[in-house]
Length: 364
Image (tube, rainbow, N blue to C red; front, side):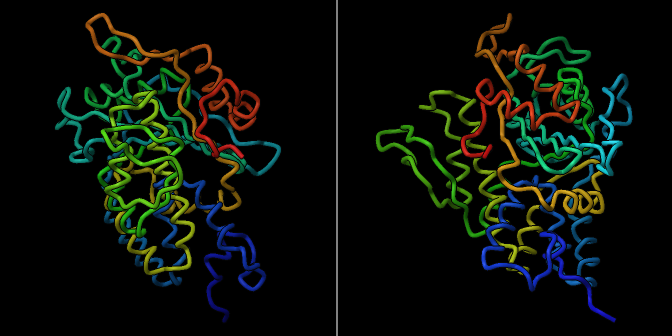
């Protein structure tokens, strides 16, 4: 009886023996396209058949579970169907939160207004043909209608009602049906970065944060603490929180790129995935089997097929009660979200790149 197929060959879609010397860089490009949740499944691709089953159980045990945050939602948007003319599955939309804390994320009874808000809100859209993905960051201070609470900053929905209310708020705002929900925190990103031995983050321009400046322009190899400091810089940023959003995206992209470069080190990857699995909370439906299915389906995805965007906005303003808020540009946001809902986001983003705020280097 032959042994199990080489798991890395499964990921890249070609036999081990046929890989050219540049295969490592191609694997890196593939993994850059995956979300943090998808990284959990790489263990199944670098472990042997028997070890994979054991490690899968370990990952399941490490992930904090949120229950089913979709159970009580009504009047939800329609899900986009798969392509009937092909065997393409439906697209997948994952709402990912970078929160101050994941503590008690799965217990709505412990939520208190103002106690927990999100530092980052991202929609990850994986196309039905698995040939493209878009990551859309929504500024945390975006002023939106929150069901049952009037208008408020979008991150207040998470504080008012936990995952269910934030999902409901996001779906009503965008018309995009959310399939899965993941929460992590940026302190955990520090541990992830250090588990990889550091990551290289591109700094587009130097921005002063004191008399000596902070992080001159260029590529910087950062530890987790340095990357956290970079993404949390609050002063001297010309775009304020909008610049912080792009810094968070750059950090996540750097982590995913470094993971790709680490695929040849199963031991190091196992340590990294143990950190990741202990750093996220996810809905019950996002099982490791489900993530493996998404990972294998997206195995041909390349970095140029993934766009990191910020939700279109008009600028900042003041609410009636004096809060500093972000005013979303519905004339640009609505057609973008309509394209996501119809699974036509890749074409829309490329056709309207000049009108959208896209992370430099993330769109070919």
